Amino acid sequence: MITSIRMLTEKQCEDVYVRICELQEDWIPRGGETSSFFTLGAAAYLDITYPAKAGANYYEKVHRYNPLLQQHFDWLYEMLSTVLEEHLGASVSYEESFALPGFHIWFSRALSTKPVASIHFDLQYQSLEWQDADKIDFTRLISFTLPIRLPMRGGGL
Image (cartoon, rainbow, N blue to C red; front, side):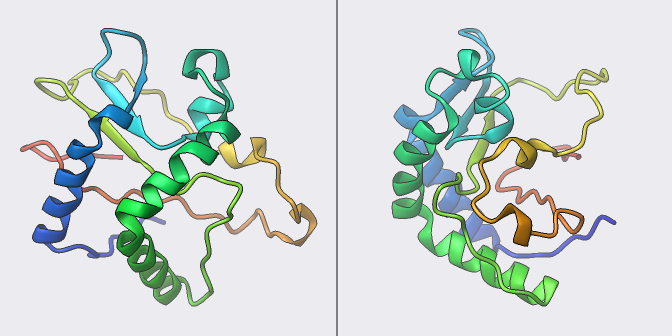
């Protein structure tokens, strides 16, 4: 099921965008030197699945980037957990040893009009080192995207 929840005002999106740009020296290049794709923060699907490509491993990046993200976006993480708690009717928390939700940054003149991304499922959670795996219901997972700025003609999942 796909659900849409309005969370941020235009001003808040602009504030987040400006802060992401101010942190450009902390962006992680993804996809090689000529790529126009970066992340701000660790990404399990990139840093665990392809550690050689990403440089430092996932848990090293978590240790480096989580304090930076918390310092600059603590209000956003608080708002996100509140919105998700209200929507899900359950408590939401961030696991200290895992990456906080980070940011994907693309710079390209236009969106691709060809099917270049594969159809996939967000299964990277299976590669994480869960402390209490026997207490977690992995059949009730959610995946979300919080767009901060989209191309003029929109975006998609």
